[in-house]
Image (tube, rainbow, N blue to C red; front, side):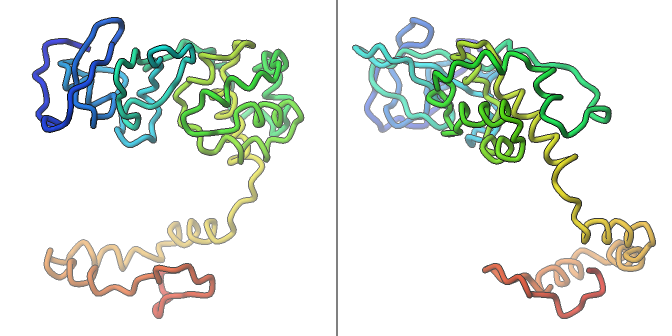
Length: 251
């Protein structure tokens, strides 16, 4: 990040409060998120800024409040600044990620155990769960993987955004988020049953079922296409399992 970027005008009407970025004080509006406060202070993001919506995990931030020994964490795009907050960002953590040929591994949990033996160094301190900004039960999915229950681990780790903050606090020095990613890949590709309707649709595409309709769309002018789109039959807003379109040609 660079100190040369011009300050943003966002939050100019709010009260200014002091925050400390890597030891240096800045006065910023109290209504801003950490990310916007850094930009207000003159920093320019070149790393550690992704979706700005709390999804990508690129802006993991560590901070401490005055008079409090607790090290706290959050996402810079979601966490609002507080007076005298001491903070720094961790856009990347040098965690181990094992290499493997996904096509060659089986759906057995021992595959994960072999690649990440540090799983069994876990002492169940739960620091990983406490530090997670998404409230993922990290220690619980680690326990599920150790027990060979990949289905449970897949479900418990589903909301992980790969920020890596769990790894930064792990006494066993494991990369929980990389391990869970491998488990979800195995579960999605090798354990979850294939959807029959998906294969039917793939077969229909290969057979050219939709070629005529696609060609028709390609020859439409813009106004006609807008009319077709706006007057199409839409699915109901509330889920109805037995709903089907009046024209089932493209099912």
